[in-house]
Length: 150
Image (cartoon, rainbow, N blue to C red; front, top):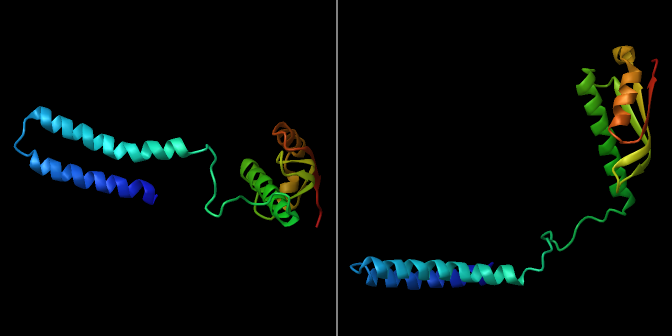
C-alpha cells in the first residue's frame, strides 16, 4: 500500500504547488493541471493492477485446511443445524422438537448420503411425508423423517 500512497501524495503535493502557481491562469492551463493530477493519481494504481496475478489471498497468506477432521466435523454440525433451523421455520415448529443427523457428509459437495430428521412432541403431528419430499427436492441427500416418542 505504501508503494501506492507515497507517489500519490507526492504527485498531489506537486500538483497543489502548481495549482497555487496557476491560480490566476486561464481555463486551458487549469484543465491541463487537472489532467496532470488525474494522471498522477491513476499511475500508481495502474502499476498495482498490472502487477496483480489475479489471486486473492487472506492476510495470513492462506486459507483454512479443509482436510482437517475437526474442520469437517464443525462443518457437518453447521450443516445439521442449518437444516434443523430451516425445517423449524418452514413448518412453524418449536425449538427442540426437531433433531437432524447427517450420515456420509461430503464437505466439498455440501450434501450427505442420508439425512435423518427426528420429530418429537407436537412436531410429530406434522406431515412427515411432505417434509421428506421437500428436503429431497433441495438435493441435500436422501432424507428420512422419523417420529421420536419420549
